[in-house]
Length: 306
Length: 210
Image (cartoon, rainbow over all chains, first blue to last red; front, side, top):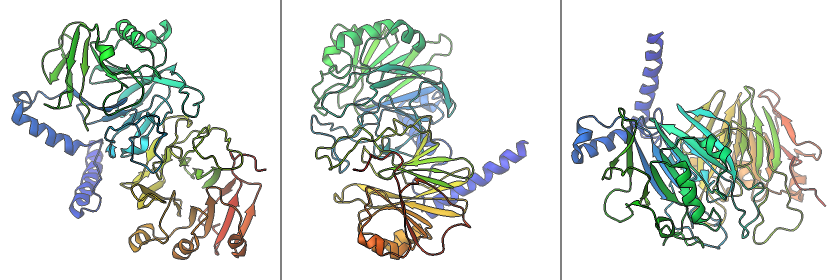
C-alpha cells in the first residue's frame, strides 16, 4: 500500500521537476498552494527572527489585507484562502460604475486553494482576479475543502441603491478554522446579528467586521456585534480610505472608544499579520508584528499589501 | 457530452463522467449604462456546476453567485485536469481595450476538443495560439469577424453566441442549421459532422424575442 503511494508521488514530483526544467509551465504549482514560495519565505524570515531558525514556525497562520473585504489567509501547511476578492479600478475594460473608486492594487492572479465569497456584488465576487483553480465557497452547508472545515451563516446585506439591485440581497458569513484558530468573516453584513445567528457562529478567535456603514451595518452596530461575539482579535475591513473613495466612513469612527487598538497601517514594517495558537493555554498569540495581544478584544488595523 | 446554450456566452456542458462545466456565467440583473434595445431580463442561472470556466474579467460575465454548490473555477493559466476533462487556456487580446486579456478556454473530453473564445478581440489567430489550440472540433464564438477564424481553425461545429443574429453570411454557409427550438445538443466523438456546421441554438434562459 505504502509502496504504491510513494511510486505515485514519485512520478508526480518527477513531472513537477521536468515542468520546472523546461520552464514552459511557469505558473505550475505542485501540491497545494505555493509550497515552494512558502519555503523561501521561511528561510528569509530565519535571518530576522530566531524563532524561525529553531523551527518554531509550525501552526502559524498569516493574514494579509488587500483592501475592501479581501484577506489572504495562509495556513501552516501552505493552504491559501482568499476572502471576497474585489474588482479594482482600471483593471478591466468594464470598470464598475463611477460612484466611487477602489484604488487598491488588484490581487494579480494570486493563486489560492479556496476563495470564499460573501455576496454577489462585484466588490466581493471578482474571482477572476484569483489564480490557480480554487474552490469557491459561498453556501451555508458545512463543507470540508483542502482539509479545512468551512461553514456559512446566512444573513442579509443592505441593498445598494446606486447599482442594479442584487436579488436576493444575501450575504453569507463564513466561519472556518485553520490550525486551531477560528476565523469568521462577516462579509457585507447589513444588520445586527440575531441570537440564532450568533449561536451558529459560535466561538471566534479572529473576526473580520465591515465598519464602513452606508452599505453595511452602522458603526455602532458593528461595535455591538464585536462585543457580543467577543473574539480575541478584530480586523476592521470595508471602510473608506485614501484608496477607496466610496461614501463610507473611515476606520477611525470604529476605533473610537475601543480600548486596545494596534495600528499597523504605517508604511514601516511588514503588512503581514501572523498568529499562533498557544498549544498549552489554547489562547491566540500574535507573533508578527509584536507586541503580544492584550487580554480582551484587540483591534488591529493592518496595512494593505499594495 | 451534452452542450446547452443558456444565454449570452454562457454554456453548460455535462461530460460523460458527469462533470458539469459552466462557461462565463451571466449576471442576470445587470443593467449597463446604455442598455441595448429589446428585453434584457434573464432568469438567474440556477444550476449546479463542478467547474466554472471564466474567459475574461467582465464582472457581468463572471457572476457565479447564482451557481449552486461549491464549484472550482478555471481562468486560464496552467492546464488543469479533472476526471475526464482537460482544460487549457490560451491568452488572447480582448475586444477594444487592449489592457485586459481574454483567455480562450479549450477543453477536451471523450475525444472531443471544444474551445470557447470569450471576448476574443483579434482579427486572426496568431501562430502561437494556433499551435496551442491544435485541432478544435466544437467552437463557441461571437458571430462577428469570424470568417478568418473559421478558416484557420476549421471546426466541425460552430455555436454562435453573444446575441448572434442570423445574417446573410451565416445563411450562405453550406452547413448552416437553424435550431430555433433546441438549446441542448449531444455530441460524441463518432457523431461529429464531417463538414463544418453552424448551429444557432435557442438560449435556454434568453429573453423572449419580440
